[in-house]
Length: 78
Image 1 (cartoon, rainbow, N blue to C red):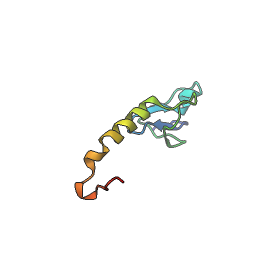
Image 2 (image 1 turned 90 degrees about the vertical axis):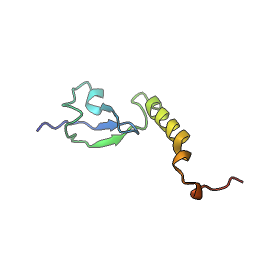
Image 3 (image 1 turned 180 degrees about the vertical axis):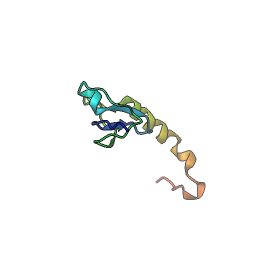
Image 4 (image 1 turned 120 degrees about the vertical axis):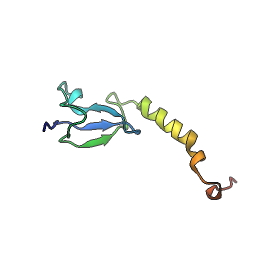
């Protein structure tokens, strides 16, 4: 079994963003293989900007979230 030396970075919806080895100019052994440095959530892109993919996922989650709240659990707004 092959093991990658990098860290697998996942977007907020679980989609693979990249492997840290790719940022260093090396090749990843495969996203489905174990990663020695583990798994990390995508928060900021390597260029220091917010991740557009994650921002879109969170926008959709926030827009759809009220549909999952039961009517008995809703709180009146002041």
